[in-house]
Image (tube, rainbow, N blue to C red; front, side, top):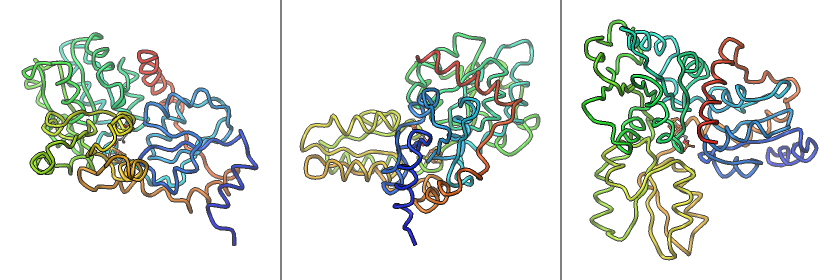
Length: 346
Ligand code: 13P
Ligand code: SF4
């Protein structure tokens, strides 16, 4: 029986340009070696428009495939090798609750602009598009928050409370204008958990979601490194707690972290606070030249659900597989929200 890697190579060769495989940086080495395009969330969304392939296979998590389906052209089919690979942070904001919160915030005629991190469902992006808002990624959050702050009377940033606060800190959004919504809005009825009196005078309102992987990184781990290796640099993803971002030598998207490792001088030691697959790849890439280490070892289980076996199986069944779709009523406003980001950051 043919092994999965050979199956992938054979099908890629036979399909040529009618197949494109996209891979997020958090994918394992075994999977990402087959990606025609690899990148962070922003880079991958930008590529969709320029792809002519009939079949686009997204090696990443479900919201990424949904964004691709939202931005894809008529006739293109988007696939993901495992539809259960979802992002737990994206799952912390449900579209109906986001709409309810916006309705509470808009009381008294206030125009609150929603800005959703790309790690959110297409349904949430649809609500955001309807309410005049947009999308951001970790690579452009500052630009997009500056944009959103100019559009109305305030901003609802969702779902990541850490990215929200890190971005607000970078733009000097005053502390007394901010509020983090109670964690109960993630699963409960916003009407019971959002006090209109408490949010009425706040102009930077933060959804209480977070990434369970980046949430694990601790300030203590950084302090130990600083004490033992004072020359080492530490950079983190902005999904980490603001205390870590403040104590780090830099923060940014996965592409920023890759570039930081690339530009570090020979002999340098760099600790990277993000998903382990990416850091391990950089460790191997620079072995013998510079030392790249994970700040702490944490893998995203959902990214890890995409395996070579599942990729091969998906390619074998492309013609009959049900592609990832976004319903028409969501697609238009979600596309509008994504397109606003692509236009602002063009
Ligand atoms: P990037 O936008 O940096 O690719 O990150 C996406 C993500 O899921 C980080 O956890
Ligand atoms: Fe979601 Fe965190 Fe995994 Fe990124 S690392 S896909 S934010 S759970």
